[in-house]
Length: 78
Image (cartoon, rainbow, N blue to C red):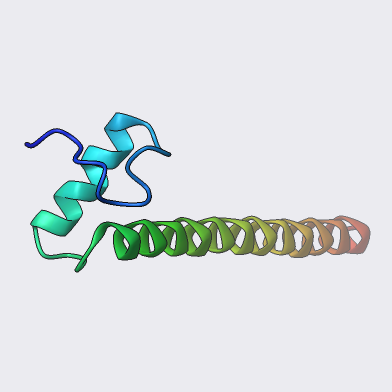
């Protein structure tokens, strides 16, 4: 892989490991350029974070429902 040319506005602003990772995404054809790769991966990270938060909320709701059912069953026992 070539060294950073400095041609990209992001080349001097991110760690080498991330630059190379984004560069691989461009070279593989996943994105047309580094800026699009950066934006695409940031959007992906944001989406994954939101999905994770939604799952946590869903698990909490399910736990609350299960707890209520168990309490109702316990209260209905003789």
